[in-house]
Length: 80
Image 1 (cartoon, helix red, strand yellow):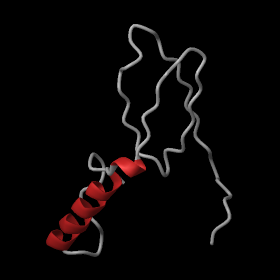
Image 2 (cartoon, rainbow, N blue to C red):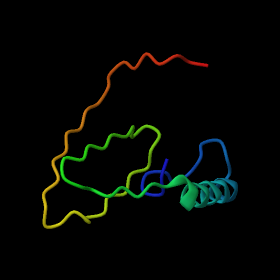
Image 3 (spheres, rainbow, N blue to C red):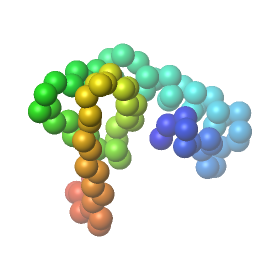
Image 4 (cartoon, one colour):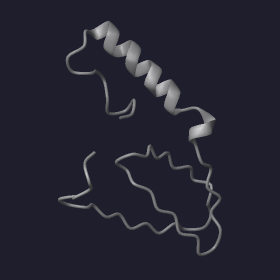
């Protein structure tokens, strides 16, 4: 869920949906839920896009960043 891809909540009227989404978007942007990652030589970072909102900043210039992306199919996580 993020403002670029989420525009309403199914089953809610437009006003309530927008109000709840605005609350959630503001909540998840609080500094206590953020990490600022400082790239250094040979650094590796990993995150799970299913539960992480990623915002890349080009603060590694003029160096190059090499990225490999994988997608897990048929995830068998335990459901609670």
